[in-house]
Amino acid sequence: MTSEPDQNDVAIIVSSCDAYSDAWDPFFTLFFRYWPDCPFPIYLISNRQSCDDSRVTTIGIEDDQAWASNLLTALDQVPARQLIYFQEDYFLQQPVSTDRIRSLLEFARQEEAGFIRVCGAPDPAIPHENEFGLGVLAPGQKFRVSLQAAIWDRSTLMQLLVPGENGWQMEIDGSRRSDLLTAKFFACYMNRPIIDYYFFTGILKGKWVPGALRLCQREGIAVDTSRRDTHGEWPFIVRRFRNLKVVRTARAFLRARRAA
Image (tube, rainbow, N blue to C red; front, top):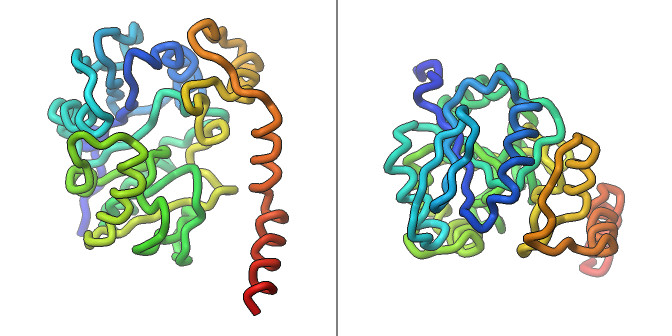
């Protein structure tokens, strides 16, 4: 029998650093616009700069280390058993239901889930009957561990973190390490995010994603674009086309025909 999740047992972690502080204002503006009744404490990982929003607790790690080392240091100050992980460029574009998130947290406890990805790719490999439209990420599946927004069981995350690793290493090597754990790994499907933010990321390889800037413009949010370049449009048009369900289905059909 699991207990009802208490807000003191849950925390939101926003992984960042001072180099990405230009994303903080649009991130938190959209976060509180689309999740105004968020009941959970919010922690921002930074270096020497602080977020001036009183609803956010800044955890300053003065000497920037690798991604995993920064997160391990920050978690020493966050005792929550369940963590909702974001990065500073996950710009919300649809309302978040607190009741639905509470129910999902309870589902995670009942299922002994170590990880539930709530946006992003890839699609889960194994169907699962649940009210949230989640599937199971199978052992051996690529990106079974993802740094997209997710609910983490603290102990599972701690078992997977390796000091000195960057985020890419965590997703690749951490996915392999996850195969050795007994915890379940769930994910939403790409076209059914539970927490919906723009294009899985607002900054890619250090440059603004143009659609994220358009989102901020529509929302009346000024963005400082003087600190980093902006990607061109064409690669993202191609990428969106390739991710359309009809295109992915056609590609899978052609692969099956070639293999026959």
